[in-house]
Each structure stands twice: as structure tokens, then as C-alpha cells.
Image (cartoon, rainbow, N blue to C red; front, side, top):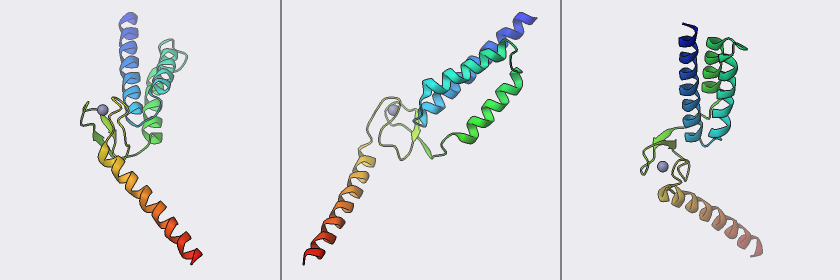
Length: 123
Ligand SMILES: [Zn+2]
């Protein structure tokens, strides 16, 4: 019975850490860091250093509260989630040319404005 409980805890830990890893990678955070952190805390929970249910609930809600809240879209190449305004997909590094073009246009508009301001100063 105790063995079964430990097995269930291990399955929950791995599943939860995998979710944290995937979701933080989607949000362009360091997925390995957050995944390893939650796995380490879960291992502490398995050995009853921290109460397991309390740990999972606290981890889940603190992650949900502090993760970057951005609009998510599916990558057109690997069909995993990514932040809508990010130029590249953190899973397959597929550059979205449309977003890149938008950013470049903003950049050129900005530099054009500065040039015209400097020209006005000269004349
Ligand atoms: Zn992708």
C-alpha cells in the first residue's frame, strides 16, 4: 500500500514537472530550470520532507500566478504553443517572417523619424 502511494507520488511528480517544463518553454523561460526545480521539490515531497499535496497545490498556484501572461498561439511548423508576439518558436526555432517584418518596419519608421528630426535641426 505504501509502495503504491509512493508510485502514485512519483507519477504525479513526473507529470507535474513535465507540465511545468513544457509550459515554461512555451513562454520562453528556461524550461530545464523550472522543470528541475519542481522535480527537486517533488522529490522532497516523496520523502515526506514537505507535505506532498500542500507542495503540489502551492507550486501549481504560484506558477500560474507568476508565469508571463501572454496570448498563446500554436506554432505553424511544430504545432506547439508559443507566445503570439515572439518572433521565433522556442521549440523548433521557426522564425515567423510576418512578425519579423512588422518589427523591422517599426524599426525603420523609428530611424526614419529620427533622421527627419535631425534634418529639420540642420535647416
Ligand atoms: Zn515551432
